[in-house]
Amino acid sequence: MTDPDFGTSGPVRPLGPVAGPGGPVRLDGPWTHRDVAANGARFHIAEQGDGPLVLLLHGFPQFWWTWRHQLTALADAGYRAVAMDLRGVGGSDRTPRGYDPANLALDVTGVIRSLGEPDAALVGHDMGGYLAWTAAVMRPKLVRRLVVSSMPHPRRWRSSMLSDFAQSRAGSHIWGFQRPWVPERQLVADDAALVARLIRDWSGPRTPDFPDDEAMDVYRRAMCIPSTAHCSIEPYRWMVRSLARPDGVQFNRRMKRPVRVPTLHLHGSLDPAVRTRSSAGSGQYVEAPYRWRLFDGLGHFPHEEDPVGFSTELINWLKDPEPDR
Image (tube, rainbow, N blue to C red; front, side):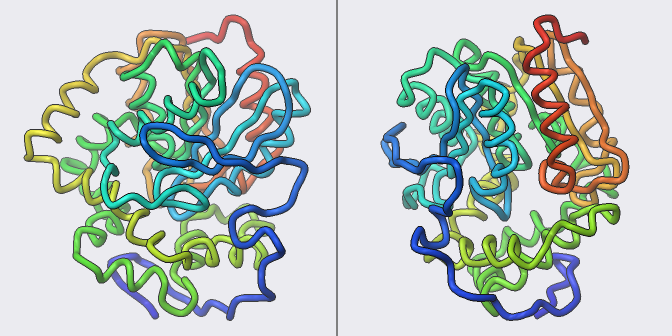
């Protein structure tokens, strides 16, 4: 299956052996799994370590497992690392509605409260980064520090998608998501072969170890869980369809409020899905120490393409008592 709207090509091998006893979501490791209630839904989390809370938010087309390297690195560095599955993905509830960014951000801040913590350092990638930006604006008292990877500030994302043809073309999958039912069928066809193609195409050329067959199998199985494809796409549908609606205008106006927590912004220099120039202007929305870090030669998944480099940058910044602008 090749869909020009997704800009992908090339064969994908059949899925390998079936997942372990934890199923496609609760994968074994040094972490522990449990469910927490927040904002009227149930969310699956994987956690490891003790110390200040660092909450990790995945992007599309992935789930909590994308942070497997950072969970261990953060725990070893003295943090309580928690990776959650966003609403509708992985082991979390698949509700019929609630996929607008304001509500999804309340999911995130609700999980912080349910974990019994006064605040958290939020680390978000892709859609998780979009929600991390949003949570830092909506509930600043619950966000100690903000780390965003591969995603511009929501206002910057909006302007880039509407006024920059190169970014609009790079994000063509988002326009393709606006069609009813077709994207869902494409995502799960051939055991979610398209998921493997997207991750491969969005990764940088300097990372031959990622994505490997094991990682592709994990992400494909997670997408094949019933209703996951639909729920994964719904936030992107809202982002486009609400552009001219009152709720979208109100959200965009709300996001004019500046981010007032220290912010680390990470990006792969060869990200084909979100252009560097689209993300680089996000600092204008931050009235706090802001650090921009570009990973040379990496693509859309720097935390998996170079997990050691990414984790080192993240932990050093979290431990810095006075992060510079």
